[in-house]
Length: 301
Image (cartoon, rainbow, N blue to C red; front, side, top):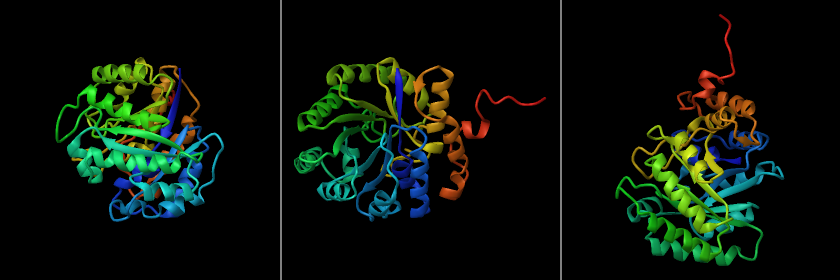
């Protein structure tokens, strides 16, 4: 199995920062990440600056970055206006997100499920004649902090709706870090069987310390694409306690140790993570390998 890493720091990571990350630093980091072998980079989000002020420079960042041919550049969008901005910026892919939880969807995008799907259909109608691909994310797929358990049937129903709309790929997101490995293996197995060869990504958070073990469970169920954030920063600003994407360099280090193939350069990732303090202005991000070193880093007695 070849695992594909999809980097989300410049969207999911930066959106949670209290201090605005300067545009130039965003562009530089994305350019450097493009040289690490990651499969995709979620560059930014074309949403209202009032909702996510940290990404108010979305268009400028998206148009200034250097594009590497083997990297897919993605933007998260919430409505038709976002799709139009993504097209203008030349994005390769847009990511549409709807929560399986009614309550979280209202908190996150201020829409009912019906309203979200109506907007998605308008987006699909707009982009179908273009080269831009569409990924559909089912957020809170493994649990909601407001509603609790989310039924597998509901998740599969929304996945089926996305596919009927013509979306090119699917993501299951553990938006608030509620997933456990038994649950992950079961749901991923069902969705993999449901969607066949259509690409499936897993978006895990390490909120409760189970992020990497959930990756293992998902791989056992046949998944091979994972979102991760350099340094492990980020999370959903519209859910309580939802900090902490799984850390990119920690994930890649684990893959190396268990001999799973990937195309990502761990040393480059660690170097970039070690410089994050200069980007985000703090050094308390949760990545572990950058602090402890690789298992192969031996010490002199």
